[in-house]
Image (cartoon, rainbow, N blue to C red):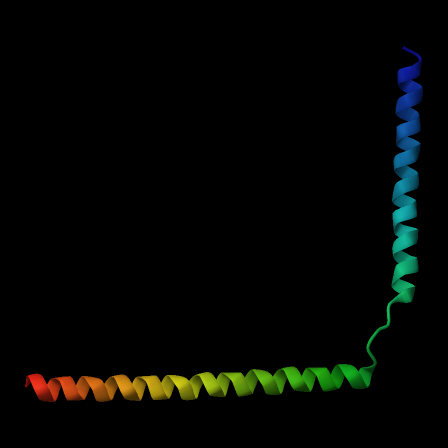
Amino acid sequence: MSASPRLKLAKQKAKKLRKGSFIQDTKEELKKVTWTTKKELINYTKVVIISTFAFGFAIYLADLCIRGGLNGLSNVVRWMVG
């Protein structure tokens, strides 16, 4: 039974080493990351905002066309049926 406590202690030490190694490895990998500059970030933000408004406006126009077509069709059916 003396092997069990030793084995348990070895596993605990290995687990602590893995956690420390993970944090250290993460820090080293973050140093390799190329971060965007402030100018790039501002340009990308502008593109996203403009694209959002453009797509929103396109959807609005499509909605107007569909609604107009359905209203016209409804009027034609009412006129035919009486």
